[in-house]
Image (cartoon, rainbow, N blue to C red; front, side, top):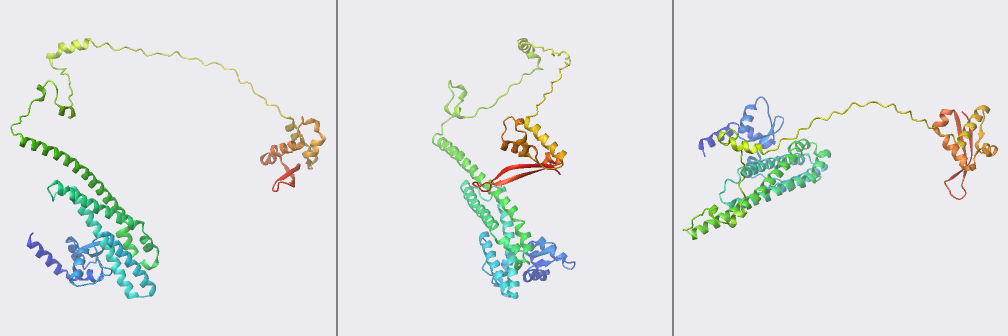
Length: 405
């Protein structure tokens, strides 16, 4: 490591020590025209981390170092496990809810700062864990060289990634996010909670799930490598035991060896050299044996002529007897300008109904002179109802009065 780089970093930290001190004790810094140069330089050295529009906080790793050096007590302890971090934030939220309802304003401000730091720690740790896993996956565990070590690391990171995904899923399904966003006690921390966790957790979970799929695929590939290595090692041991062994040409044997039946064949495709004059006669002999193609002449259909179809005879539906009587009943009520009883009309003209009973006649009148029909004819239809003595809720139609509007 270059010692001049460490000295340069310490000099820059000392030069902008006031900004680092303010970020540690105040919890955050706001970029202004006076401190823009120092903030951008500290951000370049990853001392400050952007948290919003012109808002910066101290890197969580550096904050942990300051806490340890200054013997600062953090509420509910600290942990590098993501699940424990979510649990710690849950405890801080419960404590903040209690002190806010008890009116302890000083403790409330201190707990809000602790909640902010807890949110930053979870967000930064997830981002750092994701970057580390992505690096390990992309270089295929290049820091180790043996297959056994690669398998151990792959199993370790599969378990680690599954725990991260499970922790994010449990936090997403919990009611903590809904409490912070809906209860007025947490109005100060809700915006930062939304931008640093709620908006980023789906992306974290998707990327971790993708890495988990790649790690499981590596597990399968390592198993294939192990099987291939075993076969190569067996061949090496056989050659060690038989140093005089010579490979033979299998194509000179009358029957192929057993291993050849398991080997995959080599695909071979042949193409004729039609431009080589040496093969002109051979190709001409082959071409002469090919039957000529059948020539099909297009079929021309004769032009058709339109036939004069006979008109379809009209079908006249005869008017039924009860329809004639209903029309006569409507005409009578319009001529008399008074209501006419359908039952009385049935009694007076019984011979015209062709054996239709009185109840059926009343039903025909009601159905034929429906709402739309009676509106078009300009009449009113009133049914006289009697309550049934046996079946309650039913009515018996005793008569229908038809009259002008």
